[in-house]
Structure formats: C-alpha cells, structure tokens
Length: 472
Image (cartoon, rainbow, N blue to C red; front, side, top):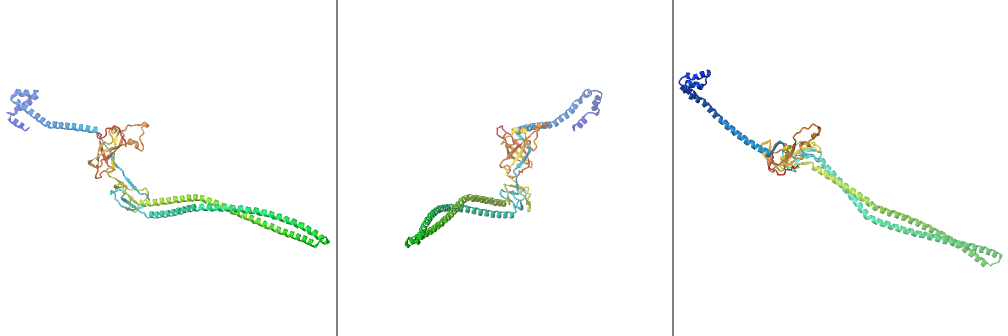
C-alpha cells in the first residue's frame, strides 16, 4: 500500500488515470478503455490488483496451517479419548467409606476425666474416658460378702452330708440290733408268760388236790370225833385224824399261796412282755428313722447343690460388679483418630449413650463405595485396577482395585423400592454399588477420610479374563 503513492507520482499525468472511471461509467470495461486510450497503463493496473491478492494469500497461510494442526491434534485426542473410553469406566458417584467405631458407655455413671481431644490419634487399648467408680467399689465389696456367705453355706451343707453319710450306717446297724434284741426279749417274755400260766394251772391243781385232802381229812376228823366222843375209838386215833385234817388245811393254805405267787409271776411276765413289745416298737421306729435318715442324705445333697448354685450366682454377681468397675475406664477398640467427641467432665451418661467415635484411617480400613451405571456392569470384574482422584486432593491419584460388586442395585436396598408392576413404569438407568480397596501403601500420610467425594476410573483391561460377575 505504501508503493501506490510512488506509482501515482510516477504516472505521466493525472487526467489519464481518471479516464478509465469515465469510460466505466459509459458502459465500457476498464481494460478496453485503457487499451484504447493508453496502452502503456495496462501493465501497471494488472500489477496493482495482483499485489493485494498475494498478500491476502500470505495472511491466510498461518491460519490454514494452524487449522490443519488443530485438526490433527483434535483427531489424535479424539482417537485417544475413544480408545480410553473403550478400556476404562469412570464415575464421580463415589465416596470414601470407613469402619467408624462409635464408643458409648456400658454403665450409667458420671464422667470423671476426658483424656483425649477431637482429632487426637489413639492406639488400641489406650484409655479415652474415666468414669466415677465409688458406687461400683461398694457393689464389688457387697458381692464379695455375698460370695463368702454362700461359700459358708455350701461348706455347712457339705459337712452335714458327710456326717450323715458316716453316722447313718452305724445308726441303722445299732437300731436293727436293738430291734433284734427287743424281739428276742419279746419271745423270752412270751415264754415266761406261758410258763407262768402253766405254773398257775399246776398250782391251781395242787390247790384243788389240797382242798380235796382237806375235805377228806375234815370228814374223817368229824367222824373220828363222833366215834371218840362215843368211846368207839381211842384218843390216839382221834388225834391222828385231827392232825391229818390240820395238815391238809396247812397244805391247802400253802397251795393257795403258791397259786397267788404263780399269778404274780404271770403278771410280771406279762408286764415284761409288754415292755419288750414297747422296746421292739421303739426299735422299729428307730430303724425306720435311721432308714429315713438315709433318704435325708439325698435331701441334704439337694441342699448342697442349691448352696453350690448360690455360690455360683454370687460369683457371677461379683464378676459382673468387677466387670462394671472395668467399664469405668473406656478404652479405644482400634487404632485411629478421635471424632465426634461429646463427653464432658461431670456429665451424667446413661448406658448405651454415644460419647465419641474412633475413626481408623489406615489404608486397609478405608475403602471406596462407587456407584456405576448398569450399562457398565458387564465390563467390571474383581481385581481390576482403578485410579482414585479425591476432590480434596486434585493433584494426587490413589491406586486401588475392585474388591466386590453388589449383588443388587442400590434401588433394591431402598426403604421403599420402586414397584414396576403398578402401571406407571419409566425406565431409569440403575446404579450398582462397587467396592474398591486401596493398595497397601496408597496413603502413607493418612489423608483419606470417610465421606470424601472421589472420581473412580477403572481400567477394564487389567482384570481377569473371566466374564462372570462375582459379587461381594
């Protein structure tokens, strides 16, 4: 453009340049006008029109080259994206999950000390909270006293059983021997009674004989007395009859006394018999008592078992009291970090009341719960490698692998699962939960926290060749 003034200044005259416009207005073309009026101007006009075209072409060349480069790069990127989508499955519907350990009080008590703070790292078995234990100490002492009393009762019952077992056989033998002796005494008394009865009969027979003798001698005496008075017999004969009569009376009196004595002996024998029978009855009762005492051993054994049960019950109560005393020191169940700490000194807590949580952040304790569309389920298999990008750490990638695939979709586990048989069915792509675990050394700094959002990209070419879909 800067050469145009020079060319215009070098032209022979100004009117000559204006003639083409006049000719053009008259309906003639510029070349014809130039050729007719001045053939010397034709080369200059053609050069002026070719110069801008060449410059425009020069300006377009970088744009064309740039477009070609962009086209080539876009084609390469598109090809790589297509290849990536063929071999990878990705989702941002995923979060980090972990095994949170909520800690609560196992006994109603008052918080005495809080040994940790929110976010503190703790180890398994480390004390976290201390509850007051004064009442529990008294319960332990009470349980110890109850156990001692139950043990004393058990010892007494055991001694009773042992003594009964030792003395009962001897008592049975003694009572049986006494019963045998009593029965023998009864037999002897019965024999004595029978003998006394026989003697009475004998004595009574002698009395009857003596009475007969008295009657006979009395008759002789009276007859001899009449004869003596009449002088028919001598005095000697009369005296003999009188003596015989008197002797018969004496014999009768003696026989009568023997009868009385025999009757007394019979009464004594009968009394002895009654006494022997009473002793025998007493011996029988003692035998029965000693035999019953043998059954008493069984009762005493049952009482001993009851005492043993009471001892065990008291021991269990003591163990429970001691265990509740142990519960006053709340310890960490696992290694992790303290979270959701709500316990305060002086706070009255109830059994089962949550006080804090321990969150393990070890790599093997956290995992990813990713939800993939059902259209991608056929490409997912156990063991396939994956890359995890955490929204909290956009410049880092954590390696992981698929550890499990849910046996059902997420909607199947919903509180109110959809019912497709109600007549208002709309097809909706379902999501399938997939569990991924991190590599052992994927997070040495414990950056991963349960609940963080992540993006999961699974390499479907890294897993096993089996086409089945294993579940968790």
